[in-house]
Amino acid sequence: MDRARIIFILLSVYIFAAFAWWTYAHYSNTQKIFTQKKDLLEMSCYKATFDLQGAVSQEMFNDSIDMQKFFAANYPELDLLFLDNFMPLDNFMVRPSIESYKKIEADLNRKLTMYITEGLVMMLLLFWGMVYIYKSFKKELFLKKLQNNFLLSVTHELKTPLTAMKLYMETLLKRTIHPEQIQTIAENSLNETKRLQEQVEKLLLSAQLDSKKYELDIQDVNVSELVTEHISHYNLPREEKDRIFTEIEEQLIVKADASAIEMILNNLLSNAEKYGGEHGKIKVVLKSNQNQIILQVIDEGSGISDTDKRMLFNKFYRVGDEQTRKTKGTGLGLFIAKHLVHLHKGKISVSDNQPKGTVFEIKLESNAN
Ligand code: ATP
Ligand code: MG
Image (cartoon, rainbow, N blue to C red; front, side):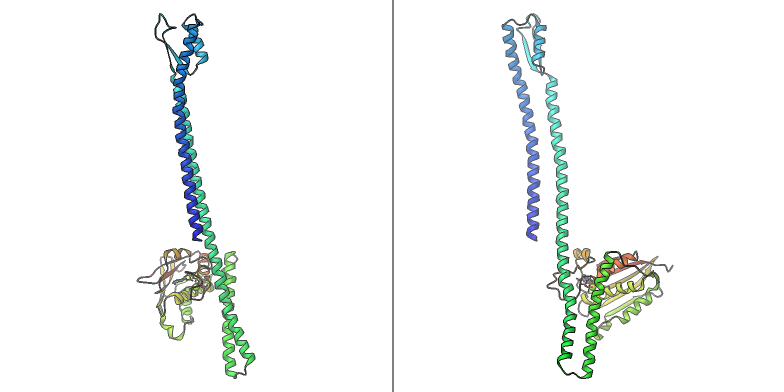
């Protein structure tokens, strides 16, 4: 892909250079033509003088008026000057008229202006076209990457629980098993089924959000209670229970869809858990500021680069290469969170935590005051 980019840049540079060269060549040719036209005009003075002298020697003119008439009819671009009032037919001078000089100059200026404006317009159009093609090209590469991510991560996320369930069923069929083991196998199978169901629901939800078919059920929600409750039930391994710290302002009410807010929080928490470094602390802050409610999920992971920050909220976007990534995920969590926040007319943003890690922040309009 990088080769295609290099070829595109080289081609663009070549087209620009060729175009600039052609414009310059036109420009300098026009100037050469101007000099040649001036030379021709000056040379035509010699021819006219020679013709007039011939005509005088053949006694074609009675007086200077006759000569002037003949001259005006045959050499409209030249001026005839009589140098001697007594013998005008023998003492005259031919020179280019000021008008003919002006005409050639005006012609030159018109052509130069034409080449410069046409050149500039064409350059701008060319530049615009190149930028447009480059952007489409980048978008195409980006979409290809997302498509690849989608195939690799989604198939993996769907295949893993299916494989586990198949194994459990095979174990049940092949071996004689104690009733308590059957219980464990059934529970594990159920967990895998739930995981599969969650993934499928996530895919369906993202499709609904994409096609704007998802509708919120807006009610007065006590976000303080909802967040506290959700965190207390958040499914962390027992030894990691003390990873999450909270700073929650009491009694913050907002008009919102409770299940949507839970989904957003759940996605941010699961990200902080997955990408916040091993046993890294996770802080959840809920506070109000003027007429806004601010929810922050802060982790101490390795952070996110500025380029990735801009891409994160795209569907199926995952940082790094899908083949080398170790964490589970489909790249849908933040896409869903972003859409749900926007449906609430709120804002979601990502920034760096100090000294390390990431802060995800959601701002919702509150109706508390
Ligand atoms: P899913 O949420 O669908 O299970 P996911 O976690 O990969 O999968 P998102 O939640 O959309 O998808 O996150 C997209 C990507 O953003 C992640 O793959 C990860 O690379 C990066 N990311 C998200 N949150 C963080 C974070 N707190 N710290 C570092 N990287 C993060
Ligand atoms: Mg996620």
